[in-house]
Length: 416
Ligand SMILES: Cc1cc2nc3c(=O)[nH]c(=O)nc-3n(C[C@H](O)[C@H](O)[C@H](O)COP(=O)(O)OP(=O)(O)OC[C@H]3O[C@@H](n4cnc5c(N)ncnc54)[C@H](O)[C@@H]3O)c2cc1C
Image 1 (cartoon, rainbow, N blue to C red):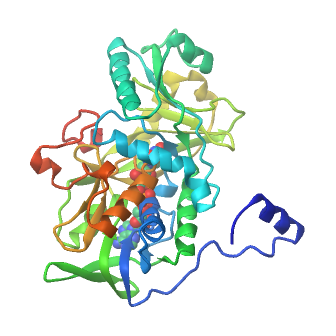
Image 2 (image 1 turned 120 degrees about the vertical axis):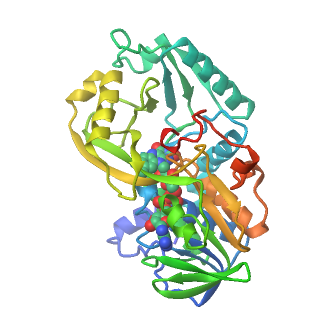
Image 3 (image 1 turned 135 degrees about the vertical axis):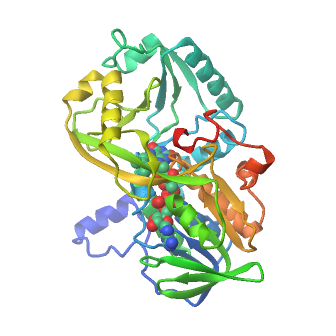
């Protein structure tokens, strides 16, 4: 079924009896050409592009819970390509270009909203760093504008410009950045993949890999053994646990990241804004809630919920930037598990086991990467060679001294 304005009109006139399920609920087949482990945004996007762009016909996505139940449905929905380093910038700009045509491509409303993202700066040194980043973005074909204090004041007059400990001096604006409805991205890719013959199998946890003579031959699951010529793993916060079943130890730690939403307010913030003197970022949802977040909880955990000290820390960041947020009531908080890599950058790579591919280490920036990550993972699996924009995301980069340390923090996963 194709979705369109006409279809909505026709269904409205006929009692909405013609809608069909957005994807099937098939039983697993004994074997597939490609099995993707993890029905998050990255796994579903990889399956979609495998079927659509790379002609892979027998593909399955195995999800231990329900699709969209992981980080893809828990993040703060920000998309952007405002990166500095060579290994990152072309990849995230490729992702941004895919976001721009994605809804038409998979015929699903993912509410992609290019409302702009503004990174505030509070010192001369920070302005210089942001100028450099903006120039790197422009050189790679992205858009960037450096705003002075008065331009920022005109956009957001309610920010604390005059009496703050870290007064706002300006901001780096990427107008093409913005937000997308996170769970709709998973649903759109799931529906598009299903229409192209991909089996999406929920409630199917992978519990082991069958490896014969150094080659993967399939996966053990809670619904029995499923054979596969190739297996791609995209399980985000569970990466270390899943890859350990294949005997691999990853340069990844798992941490909790929380997100927050206030009660619904009248429109006040039309874009996305990040505080430059602390970790706090905020946007406003279509329902009116202020959606915001900050740092990870700071210790390793697999719990999908956070703790009070970080709630206090994030609230302090919000108060420092826009004191009027103190009058809004916090409605909900939740958490997701972050696969924090040692340099803050991800992996899309082959492994030492033939036919087994790994995608992970997205830290808390993987949502914006969803389209490009899916595309590049599909490219790697289908062609057995990395996509040109993802060629830096190798597992052996630490051994080679080729880190992609965007923040310059060193091997401190909790700080990336
Ligand atoms: C609070 C929060 C805010 C964030 N904000 C942003 C943001 O604003 N912008 C941004 O770019 N990124 C953001 N992120 C990060 C982003 O959400 C993640 O990097 C990204 O979603 C991870 O990829 P995924 O969608 O494939 O992960 P997931 O949705 O977590 O998918 C992985 C799936 O694998 C499944 N799985 C695990 N183990 C198994 C198994 N053994 N067998 C089968 N299935 C298994 C899980 O159930 C899960 O559904 C945020 C994350 C959080 C938690």
